[in-house]
Picture 1 (tube, helix red, strand yellow):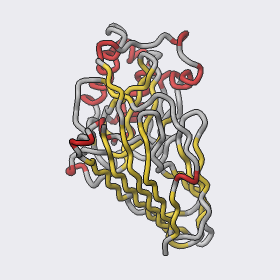
Picture 2 (tube, one colour; picture 1 turned 180 degrees about the vertical axis):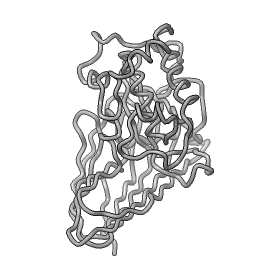
Picture 3 (cartoon, one colour; picture 1 turned 90 degrees about the vertical axis):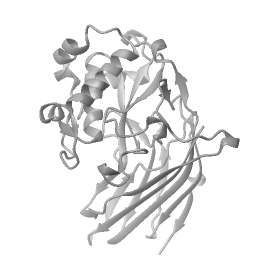
Picture 4 (cartoon, one colour; picture 1 turned 135 degrees about the vertical axis):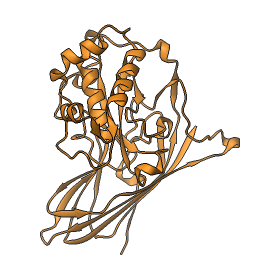
Length: 303
């Protein structure tokens, strides 16, 4: 088991008219990822509404903030019980056999224009054996052709832009891999978490975007940017692309400071808790989700 102590700090400066926020910073509750000791601190006297999406399990917090500073502090203990599978046993699922809730992840989306990448995907990967090894080949292809470079993209950058520019950050790698998978009728979605294990040379710890691909009836983790240890990824949200899983969606004139994130692994041999590490098996933390409710989070107003 992996245990992560997670701390997220966000700071905003809001103009005189106030602003509305939708946050996706609460760790998801799934059958393989359990969350405890949650605490939320907000400095303003607001009334946050926390809800769980009935399809994805994403947890959203909506609030209306007043002019001035808004400080958000979220902490939790997250236990990951990964499902391990030998990669050679994982197969692609024919479209005709996909569950209805999976079908949305084979269509093009705002940042993943899979309908524009069909010829490229068939040329590069159409001849490969259909299964985990083909998805791995797509991940490796993206990783080899795109250079991880900070501040080279923005909120409008799509998979096509990344393919042309050949630079990007984690969300750009994810968008391109997702688009190529979908171009081959392989369901793929974006997942967000934190960048556990990232090289400090890339900058301070941050939120992280990676990919989950549907194989043999379960979503499996891929990290096309290669910047993290996938076993240490705490899932916050999943969606078609970055438009669905932004850690903060803001309505109003707001300035923001860089997020401050700490994800610390707890090692305890007696309790069979180990540090995240790279492994050769395919990893999943998905097999349905467990609905949380607002009362599970201790909310504290701070000055």
